Length: 100
Length: 317
Image 1 (cartoon, one colour):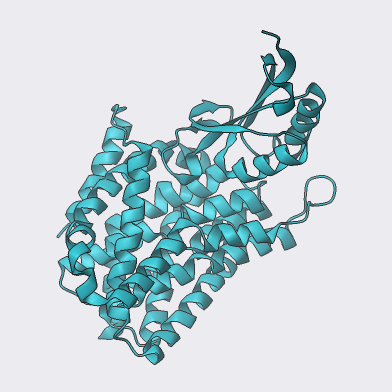
Image 2 (cartoon, helix red, strand yellow):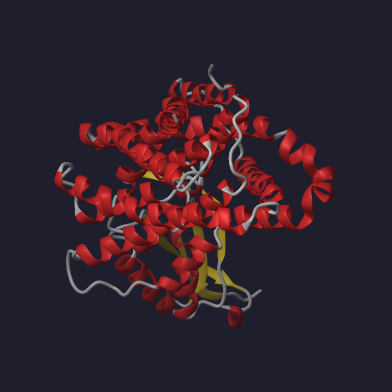
């Protein structure tokens, strides 16, 4: 079965950023997104999801590489200086190109 | 006489410090907090329906005013004595201007244990005091703080106001008050065993979880330094007295005055951190949460609340 090349952009961030990130993803041209609650630790300390201000999310968006780049740049510029943010991309193949 | 629920908090702290694998599921934490907010609201609502509005207004207005004033009192102390950055001073001040519902619940539990009555509209004051301090703190940070580089991005007040007013604390407290007032005691009697009968047990479980949370933040205190520890102990002592005086002047009973003192002395660790994170991202959450959860919250529920009751007694006699 034929697949189409897309970028998977994964953004792991403080849960406070959930609404702004969804808004940004839509604005930059993502057709959809998936969010899960996660916990972990990094240079800004551990985030154990024990109570409201301690929650983290992982957001996945599958988009064209140009959109992934613009969105990633925006996230790095707008949020990374002051929030716990990790992001990375991966090449993925999707079956229905028009969905993304 | 120690309130048993406080011992559950201590157990949580000990478990965390001993690196126990004890962990309450996040869904349970969420459920317990929804329960507590609704139970406090419902209890107040049932009684509130019988109150003349004239007796509610003075303390309600005073509560809003108190919540907005506290950050203005604390900010110069944090800046001048603590030498904190503008955004950190404003953020911490906002946390103290807002309130902690769990601290209020522990105070309610202590009053019930000692058989001291309080005004039924106190839960309304909790809801009213949630937002003003946060708004004042944000304005302080935005007006007095300078961004490190470039122009400051405009603040989107809409989502922020929505976050605070329709966040679960205010929504469930006010929702419970309205349901209690509209339904009345008879209609509520079938759900009474759940919300009123189990209140203290649920509070105990919730405080066990809070103990785990606080135990995990104790490391932040060491980083926060001596000034913030002193601030975290001193601020509630002074603010509690201020709250007691305001409660007394607005004609609250002994129990009501003690609760007003507790509200003034308490610091938010749910609504304020979330709002400040959105509105003032430059402020360090480790500092504000470290002092609020690591110092003030444990102090209030162990030594603070009995002392605020004592404040109320002194003013009343």
